[in-house]
Image (tube, rainbow, N blue to C red; front, side):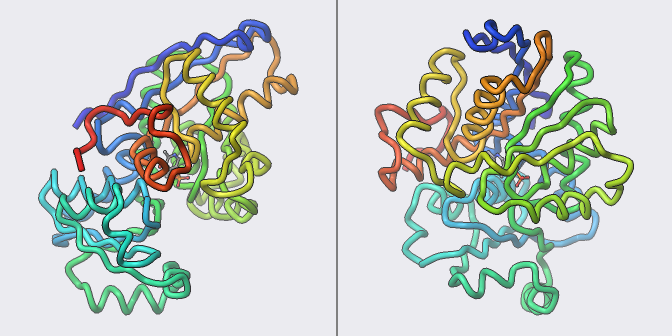
Length: 313
Ligand SMILES: *Cc1c(COP(=O)(O)O)cnc(C)c1O
């Protein structure tokens, strides 16, 4: 699997007006199915699985999880078993994300919200490990310690591709931001855009994952750009994003990468960046999520084309 994504300059009237140099690291192009940060985060988890002789990976996610989708495909591709503990009802199994996951051999177990809430609980995890001794357990979003070296490789690639001042990434469970902090090692400013409400607790999560919070002070988590919460967005947000995609020729989805774009535009309008500032956006992928949003009628199919390469239904 390719592990080196292209970097592309973005043209936009607002960037010209503010004399900003904006580029995008196209991790959405790493692979047609396991795209973006989920592949980066899984890479060394898969190594671990092989080294420790587990037969598979067990992980957690919502009904449309990009992580679950990527994990299922990785299992199919590399030949290990996958088990997904999914928050929701069994009928979710027919949705675009989970039907693909099952096609790639993932076993799904549906749990209600209360059970799902235990996903970080030590006793619960011990119990799961006893029930599924052959499986290596990876947390929701794939954000564990082993996710960091894979994400850190983004920074090594960027250093060989360009010079820049600020790196932007969307933030969900904070594994990606943590990996970038480690990989960057205080060279650039890093801005994480939280895509969920009340994300302040993730600051602590980043400090824990990076274990070296004091020596890495070049990052910030911006928590005001959730636009109503996880997977929430307004018609205006969609209009703005579509316009941005049309001007730049780069596809986005409104749950993760799209919120990073909306945040960027707002920051620029508030003069957060000096003229001449060089910005790199990390396109974390996640475009498979568009299929689920179309299915739920949250976006219009004719306005939000699916990326090529997803399996037909
Ligand atoms: C999961 C995901 C994120 C968030 O990454 P975390 O490591 O969970 O913070 C960002 N973008 C996309 C497309 C994702 O699927």
